[in-house]
Image (tube, rainbow, N blue to C red; front, top):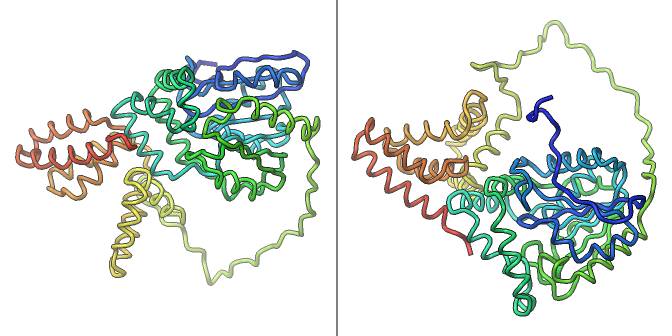
Length: 426
């Protein structure tokens, strides 16, 4: 088996008694396993604690993960290699998202769960994709410098200068491509409709002053998970394990002591009704075949949904929603055509990646003088992985083949969009 074929695992460390039950701690985006350092003395009295790093964090291999579900799979492989079958799990923010995936995908292995500063959906997909664009254009410096404001309450920042500086250095050292991939994973993470399927006893823990995942997000988790309870820590913000280590350590210890079970609960499977056999189709009414398009792609009922998803990923929710509001009823069929065929079929064909399709699209729009669409697709190119320098290189190339006047106008449009899209948000 080659390295590319080998199952991916996560960088990790283990502390505590070798024969104790295993407790896994998951980190927040931009942090390392060291965010849990001050809980280790308390937790290793009873548990063998495994902490892991996200890809590209804390010196871990820069192997970007495409989703929170993929991270959960990587963690399960890591635990398999360590000989761990059943475990408790506590995760902060991104680590909490991984925890919900574990509870949904492998509930028989999770003895008890704690979601810290977490949510069923983190903000909006558009905001996370926008953050990825900013990091791709500007790197992580601005993100790192602003991390303490997002992570810690003002009173904590005023008196804990050393920890504030540590947090900046930790975020600054993350691999940018892995951070961008994590932004995409959080943009796609939405388990609101699945919370009722989580059967693991769950503690939802948050900081009263958290502005990233506010207490309302914690209450929504408790309302959706059948066996969940809430704990809100006063005076703490997003990285509550760092701000209030003793309180968090005690809450976690009490939760896992009270809810840990060595064997998964047996879920009764209801009896299945006898299958309904459909009546045969009369010979006089033959079944109409599904139409096929060039390249063999079937025009199934999900093409509109696929197109809408791709369009939103590249152009943003605000743009697509505004376009839908401005569309007159008479143009509804055209909007359906564009979403279903251009975005659902052509943009999702496997023959070219999105970066290449963006290069082609920008060139065609410059040639046609379509400046409104050029602005939208400059944004799409940034979100699809092109850097500002690569977009300017494409426009420089068009000056040779489409003419200098056309390229001059295109440069003005593209540079305006790039400035807007890559400006760090407050």
